[in-house]
View 1 (cartoon, helix red, strand yellow):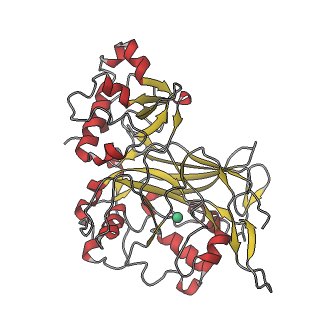
View 2 (cartoon, protein in one colour):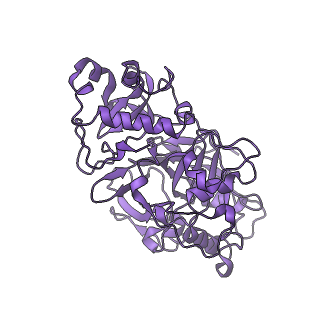
Length: 429
Ligand code: MN
């Protein structure tokens, strides 16, 4: 099926600001609440939110086989489970409805009133009910930097790392949409020099992790696996992902079973899922792999994506300072390899599952995806525009992540992924 929604020459009759992340070629999917307190599945063009349940009720999707309530839901899980053919038909149809030459909805004021909202009049929700969340560790630069800082510079990369897309199972209940404030976590950390008891209190080394995550559809039955050639068929789309991390809690707890409370207190995502279809024009060469991967991890064709990434820190009442510029293409292991690996043991993947990339660090010091690396564990504090500096994240700071792809014809973006840090709630014990 041709992805007509991607036609770079297409224009919309809805106004799209210059440099918008959401031209008519994007057509992401999300969930929002309207001013009338109705929760619905929608898409976005420019600064307009479009109610897909209303469009469906008015008959605009009549030629596509969809159940009546497919968009009248508080999550995209059922729509995603309908599979890639349906996603493509719906995206193509939305593009046709809002094409500058289409005169159906455009000329119907009553319908427009029911379907189109200004973004400032809706409240974005989580796009999916996340069943399982897995976080990978797939940037070679990040794994090398963290291995150097946490363990041993001589053997920074563990011997398995170049053969396996390393991952762990994260906590899905604390995944929150952009704009939700987070509480500084409280927990145990390493005993101070000369002390026999661990420290306990608010984390002093609160960090962000610049990641992206992909969202899957129902993929395989328990006991079966997804061949790598088919893996991308099961990826619906991607979001920005801030895997908030408390480095002091993490450093004390992570051996022998890996990250736990240092990670599980919150992860922030951008609320619009940008489909893999919309990212199609931005495929780029896969990173060169040091060892030839085992056959089940061998990819054919371009499975990397050129997505520019940025992180800023905004102290309360001050201007933002950009602290990192990275790119999704720096990932050593591609999403297809991650999904093939995830299921090689027969683990079943379901609609609405979320797979974090792991921190995306590039080759240069200004492209690292965490404060741990950017400040080199606090040795090199980063100057802020307001004259202060940062080793890690302070209370009342807002962390802002952005992502977009760009070529001569079109820019496809993800919108902001923001979170403000509130002071810890302290306990008596
Ligand atoms: Mn992570």
